[in-house]
Each structure stands twice: as C-alpha cells, then as structure tokens.
Length: 217
Image (cartoon, helix red, strand yellow):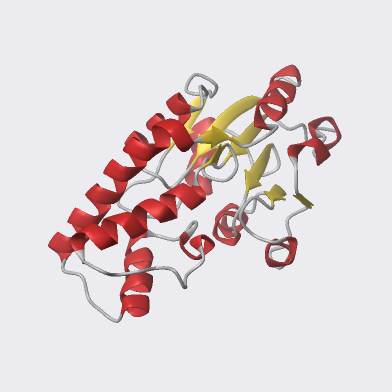
C-alpha cells in the first residue's frame, strides 16, 4: 500500500524546543516556589508525558505537593517564559525542511501531531517560519497524550499509509497504540539505545540519513 501522509511530532522533530521547555519549567517553579531546583533531573524525563505526570514527577523530586491553583500558576508562568525566551532561542531541527520538501515531491500530505496546546504550537511554528507548512495540525487537549488513532480517522488514512517521525519513547508508543507500521525515531533528545527498546523501523541521528523515497515503495 502506498504512503499518503507524513505525521510529524513537533518538539524534537520539527522544532528544537525541549531543552528550552525544561528551562522554562525550572524558572517557573523557582518563581512560584522560591529556591527550588531541577538540576539533578535531565530535561528528557518530561518529554511526551501527560501534564499530570510532569507535576507528579516534580513533586516527587522536590518532596512537596502543589495545589491545583499552584499548578495553574506554574503552567501559565512556564508558558510565559517559553513565549518570551523562545523568540530568540527556538530553531528548526536541522534538515526538517528538506524532509518536508521530499514528502511534497512524493505527493504526501504533511500533518503535525503533538500533545502540546495550540497556542504553544502556533508560537513555535511561527518562530521557525513553518506555520504554513502543514496540511493540518492536531494538538493536545487537557494535558493528555496524543491519539494517533483519532488522527488516522480524521485524515482518512490507514495505519499502513502513513510515516510517523517521533523523538521519544512516549511518542513512539502512542504511534504503536494505533498500530502504525512505519515509525521513524530521531535521536534529538534520547539515545539510540533508549529508542531501540520500542522497535521503530529506523533510528536516525540526522535527517540526512532518511530516504522517504525508499519508505514510499
């Protein structure tokens, strides 16, 4: 069956944003809760997991509890920092434009699939000048993980007709939950060994290693 669409995660796949995102969490926590530090945590620990799990991880690490009001304050402050700092710090992942051009040449549709909220996605894409590059954008709601089964239904494609590119174990697992057959992993934020455990069909370090023509055969 021929490939019809390329499904891209945003953070770590299209936009190099994960280290900045973690920095903004830390700055927000310090502002709301003085003298807290996440220095013993690696930024990858929060990639791809639901918002509730992120707060639980922080609570465990900091030996504290956040009220719902504090959680909302921290989240808003984190996003404010992201919008402020991201204007100068966000960059596209090297080579992603070439991959997208190749997909267009093959006649594929290109969709963004992310668990991030729409406001954050729109900002990130505008900042790296890719806001008009997609045929559709599927964003997160209420801190939940992405649902590839819903995406497949909305774009009217089967699990055999799409290529997914993800950068995290959580993202790969989400695609596997929809039984998507062609999953590519890129080592932007996780090691090859960490990603290999989830058995994507290919693990790449750079987009120069990816040949969409071969996948579309």
